[in-house]
Length: 248
Length: 223
Image (cartoon, rainbow over the protein chains, first blue to last red):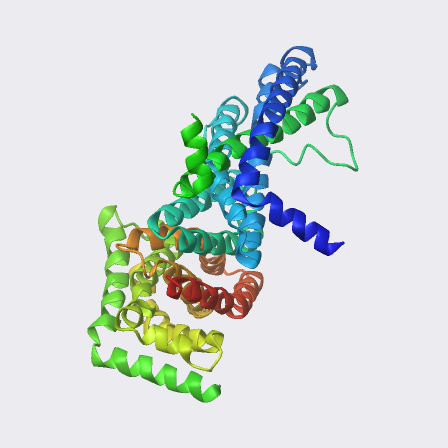
């Protein structure tokens, strides 16, 4: 059983096989992301009821919250891939981590910008030193630190290992940072999505969840595109890449 | 194992004693940065008192950051780092010895001069013990986390800015709790919670950071 799984992992993580497979998967992810995204946005912007307190401006939640979820999700994905890369020496895992970083940083940036645009009408200011805003900002710095370290080391293998270790250290630190930042009294509204109590109308919740899935599919499509580029670039002197280039 | 710890510690202290300027410089930097703040604004008693915890702690952070290079840079350049890794003793213990030496040479002096800065910044006397405790508990964490950053960047050309980019975000919890403790102590309230948290962070850092540092050193050496 384990041997079969291991063999499959070995096969899938070979750069050539990954390149072929991901090429077939990308259109599906992209189309699904676009369909779900458009439908979710339609429901969110036109169908969902107006908020009794925040009026129409609450609708930015449909971008803000999925982006904020993605910012954390991608960091965890990167840390897991980095751990896989470090432990089992799978090059592809490191490439996934490296390909994810700019996407994660972009989502973090989007979450910060939409959050501050939302904050202006609600709190009367673009920026407050509130716990969640601050930890999101620190997350952005952690992304930057990873990308800086990754590009500073010339030897690719060492760069992957070193920046992977940094990701793992970051994952240990994130909960500590988040809890220490929560020390301050917070202006940010409490968690909206919770399994136990329904603080959000179901007609508002459905588009939010649709968009959250759409964002994840978008990430899947984009990370595969970026990882394919990474694979081609790193294996540029290998024969299978040469063969692809010659066919063009 | 303990002998290796002890000898490495002595070696680092001895090396530092031969160039005392390197120990004194971060200290002067620390005092200098704190001095800049009252000069940059109209130093009213109330304002200084309000800013004191943050200013003192940010300066301590920067001063430790500047001195981090010393932890592994020289050893990396003259090859003794490779010797350390070849030694049969566990690398984690050796890392711990080096970090402890680094703290004795940078963190402890900061603690010792901090009463002077407390006077500069008009920190009330009741908060002075808390200032000392927070520095005693906090600066070792700075050295421990910094060691991870240095060992990742020691082989990078002009790694200084990179090092601060990596290490400063990880310093945030210490900064928040330490500065908050002094702040709370100034108004005469109990700071047990903050100090316990700093103690917990220190415990966690002592047990995990050397492992990460050792792994990072191996990655650096494998190039």
